[in-house]
Image (cartoon, rainbow, N blue to C red; front, side, top):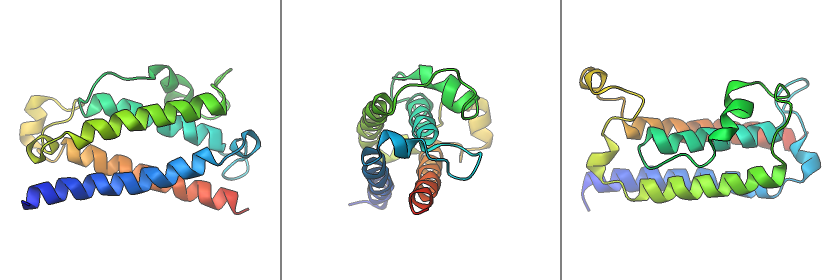
Length: 161
């Protein structure tokens, strides 16, 4: 196995580990638990579920892996703060979207070759990519894995209160 293949497999394995932890957390949350705030006056867990689902959905397009599945989640979970949207999807609807989006994301990244991992992502122009080749798919995916880990920590601390 080449170093490049091993690195790509390591990145995907790390994602699977972190996403699996999130799956277990989210699937175990009741509607009442989803309404808990991470701190007084701060985001609720249902908002974090929607936020992460929307961010991962957007990642499909950024990594050029396919069309977005749930762009309707951007407004209430990426553009607006918690409680600003008049209506949000139910916890069950968000959990289903979470699983759908992450399955599509995983299927897409598992097909990437080592060379494709270091190609530019969709939010950087070809001209800018020539100047900053670190703005690639791998960097985005590592950032998403870190972002997910951060929010998992918030969720775990919230549930221990």
